[in-house]
Every structure is written in C-alpha cells, then in structure tokens.
Amino acid sequence: MYSNMSDIARLRCQIIQEMEAMRQAFDGFAAGSARHDFIRARMQKINDHQERLAEHIGENDAATTVCELYISTVENAPLGS
Image 1 (cartoon, rainbow, N blue to C red):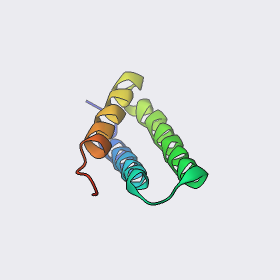
Image 2 (cartoon, rainbow, N blue to C red):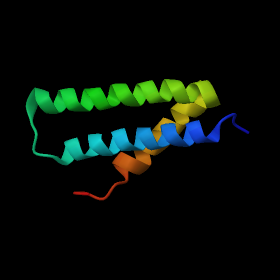
Image 3 (cartoon, helix red, strand yellow):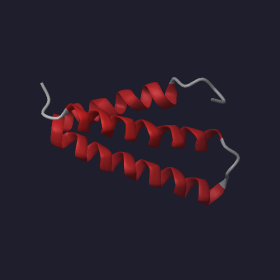
C-alpha cells in the first residue's frame, strides 16, 4: 500500500491539529487582522503538511485526504466545540 504508514499517520494528525486550531479561531472572540493572520498561518502549515503527505501517497490522494479531514474536522464539528 503506502511506503511509511507512521509518517502518513503523523501528518494526518498534524493536519487535524491545525484544522482544530483554525476551527477554534472561527468560533473565538478574536477579531480583525490578528485572527486573519492566525488562520492564514494554520492554512500555510496545512499546505506544508499536504505537500509532505503527497510525497508518500501522491498529490491527488493528499488533496483528497486534506479535503476529507477538513469536512470531518471543521465543517461537521458541533457548534461551539
């Protein structure tokens, strides 16, 4: 299947952590450019992790994985969680 499952699992966990931080910023009280900068930094880290994930599973599978993680972590999260 994939060459190194532990690296893949670690990258998935890191992506989820960044997305959870981003989701908390969406729900938080921070406003203005500080919140925007925080979310942009999380998005950049997610992109970096996606690029490393692509080295293991290919670009299309990495993009699909990130989209699926976003949906399950950010979009489907209960409100206020």
